[in-house]
Length: 239
Image 1: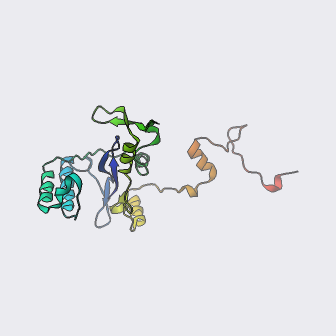
Image 2 (image 1 turned 135 degrees about the vertical axis):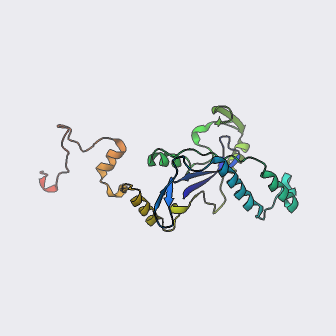
Image 3 (image 1 turned 60 degrees about the horizontal axis):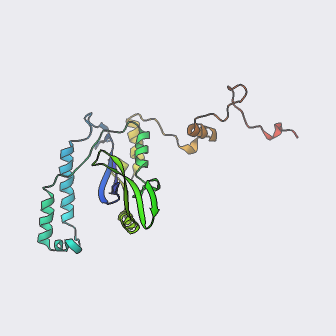
């Protein structure tokens, strides 16, 4: 019961495939009752790491892949099987952190990832003499912000590493968030958890929307600062 997003880049724009998952803190059981997640959060991280590694490598071993260049030898089944087997001896990293503080923070988090590309414009410092300089955060060195200078060709190569193939879906939803019959499932979840009804922006008046966006009441009387001004009717307007 979660949203899953595929990501392929790190701060240095090299190929770094990984998955972001936002897990709901509960779900519906088989009889349609809401079951809250444990107060200790989701599940043991080490268990999740091994489970993900096992599932991933199991499905990878069943694919009919074609290799070239320095890894061309993996086209032989025995070599490929040996390679897959060796990956089971490597610890896979799964990072897991507690839930977000509020729905607004969930939207803020997703907004940083759902429509991002490999690099934002503000990180590109300069483009001159056939070189591109951009800023990046080195997570292995206390998250320090550093500058990296590469040739324009290398910069373009790194960028195109993250152009998704046609038909590839960047974001997928599972469980109660899956597209099929999602509306009725979410309505049931909100009812069972006493979640206040969300009011669509289309149901609000223009003045209410302006107050929500700018935080001030544009319709307030400038004289008494108490009453609200109303639009004059055509009959009350004199020449």
